Amino acid sequence: MESEDELVKTVRPGAVLRRLGRGVLDLLYPPTCLVCHAPIASSDALCAGCFGRLRPITAPWCPRLGIPFQHDLGPGALSAEAIADPPPYDRSRSAVLYNDVARAVVSRLKYGDRPELAGFCARLMHRAGHELWGSDAVLVPVPLNRWRQLGRRYNQSTELARALGRLTGMAVEPGLVARHRHTRQQVGLSREARHRNVTGAFRSHPDLAARLAGRRVILVDDVITTGSTIAAVTRVLAKSGVDKVDVISFARVVVGQETSI
Ligand SMILES: [Zn+2]
Image 1 (cartoon, rainbow, N blue to C red):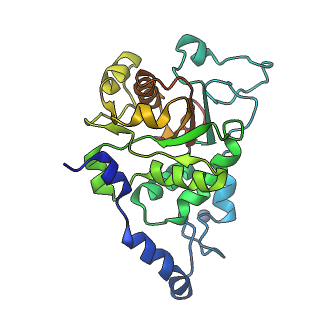
Image 2: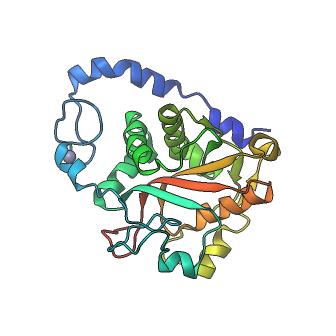
């Protein structure tokens, strides 16, 4: 039987050919900004104008949820959200606020037609997550469910995790958590409905406990919207004995801050 593992590891000859052919293609079709399509010097994702419209998330922030504070509340101060609904993971960090430019980047990342884009996002995530990296930890991408993965050719979170693995030297372990039933979009659901929506949607690979025993896990996702998905994956990891989980994402929806979904 085909396992999620095999799906995740499927070799993508198309991506390799695209990479080989890019030098030639750049001569014929100069690279363009993926957001506004202006010509750019290298195929490295964004023109200076669009890059400047990305909003990096910087300190001060909630040390648990990684959402930015308007004012510095002092060391260790938690956000109201983290106090009202403590997350099961330890720390979450994201590179940028989810705004129009971030949405365009994530959308292109999902279609996988710009393979260099994962590297672009990972460089920003590398900086945002600098407190998280360490040889005690392993990078685990948040899984897509099976039909989404097939429709999309690949899992963008796995591509981000691999790019982060190259930057940090950390191991990447895809396929240890699988999403085995379809979940509705979380946006617009109440907290209870979100919890119901994702509870039981994930299951662990039989090898998970052995592969991750005693290690810290850093979950890798493209966008954190409500946080329910990463919370559900964290609970699955905890059941298999993983007791330290951190999270890194490219973008994060922060209510009231440039969000447009
Ligand atoms: Zn642009």
